[in-house]
Amino acid sequence: GLVDLLLGHESGPQYRRAIRGMLDGNESPEMYHFLVTALAASRRAEFIQLLIDAASSETELDHLYSIGDALLLLPDTPETAVLGERVQQSILERERARGGKQR
Image 1 (cartoon, rainbow, N blue to C red):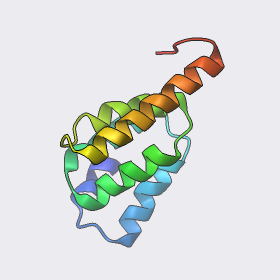
Image 2: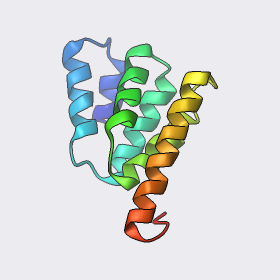
Image 3: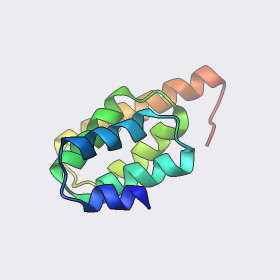
Image 4: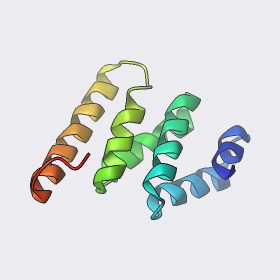
C-alpha cells in the first residue's frame, strides 16, 4: 500500500519526512517490520540512511528485532557490522530489563 507507493516514488524531502514519521509513529509491529525491511531491500541510499537513523534512536524491543532483521539485507560492510552489533546490544539490554527474552 502506502509504503510501496512512497518507496517506489522518486524520493523528495516530503517522502522522506512521511517515511520518517511512519518510523517514529506507533505503528504496529508488523507494519514497522515491513517498513524497515522495505527500506533495506530498496538499496537506495536515502532510505538506507533512514534505516540507520532509526537503528540509532529506536527503543522499542519489537522494533529493534525488526531493524536487526532488516540490517541482514544490507551489504556486509564494517559500518553495517558495527550498527548490527549496536542493535543487538540494545536488544540484550532491553531483554534484561524485562527479565528475559521476549521474542
